[in-house]
Amino acid sequence: MEGIIALMIPIIALSIPIVAIWTKHQQKIAEMQISKTAEHTAEKAAQYASKMQALEDRVRVLERIVTDGGYDVATQIEALRDTRRVDEAGAGVPLGLHSKERV
Image 1 (cartoon, rainbow, N blue to C red):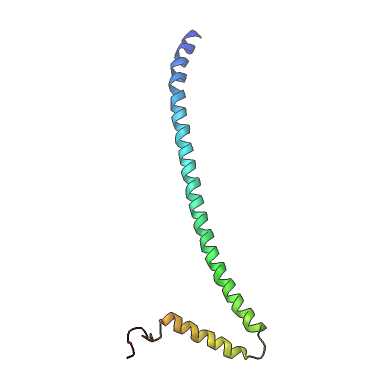
Image 2 (cartoon, rainbow, N blue to C red):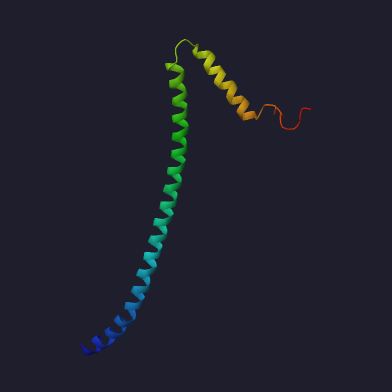
């Protein structure tokens, strides 16, 4: 019995630091996973917020079209499409009012 206790004391003494190091390592891994999950969640939230803003803008346009009386809905939709085409194409000619001075 004394031989077993004499053998167990050094084994326990050596296993305590090993368990402590392993526990600290597991804690660091868990913290890294939590931070990665938090970053991913924040990124998704930003994407959803931008999509939500785009949808809110579209709903506002539709509400404006529906609530404004006396106008043809198809004409307004076409006008909005034309405006988008001009904006997307970057079309337009600068007037250049500042480049020439009148004498």
